[in-house]
Image (cartoon, rainbow, N blue to C red; front, top):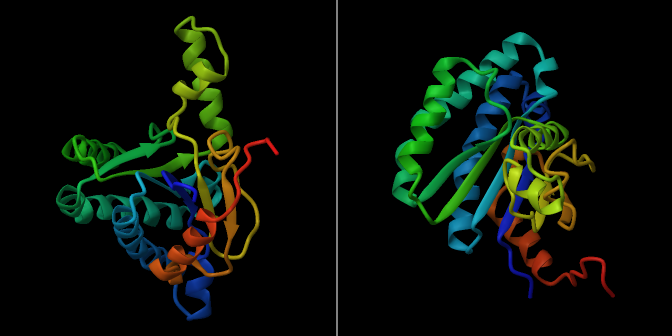
Length: 223
């Protein structure tokens, strides 16, 4: 039976969820944010050590400015509202991606939350914000070059924002692509694509997918 250490999720479908109900796209993003707590709870209850969530990609800046501004404010509100829960539940908060373009106010909330949860051990929650796997790899190579390090698989792996391999990658919303998410880390991940829109994704459906994952024969290139 496979052990699930690192779960990664592409949270897709917020906009379509809202459109189906006659809501604004922003309402879909709010509904999607509410699902995160359930996913964290499932991971803690089932021994998953790392949960990486694709929150805002390097390509998402192409969206309408008002939607981008809303997403930045939603992230700030999320951190303020959930910080106490992270501390209570032993969740260590982290970000992957390049946060340098964000406002000082948002970067401050990110840093406060990281510092407040630094010693927590029950779950590492990675929010991928302004994240793209190609960008992550380029930044890692530049870092190694600046440090005068040899570039090989081991050194590059350590220089990435997250070095732990993904065991299971799930994408909600019905699309069957990785969209530049954790391409290095997910090189041997099991992939599951569900038509369920992210705000409707439940712990029960996650449990069903995890049960299938645990019974898959993982060969890692062997026979």
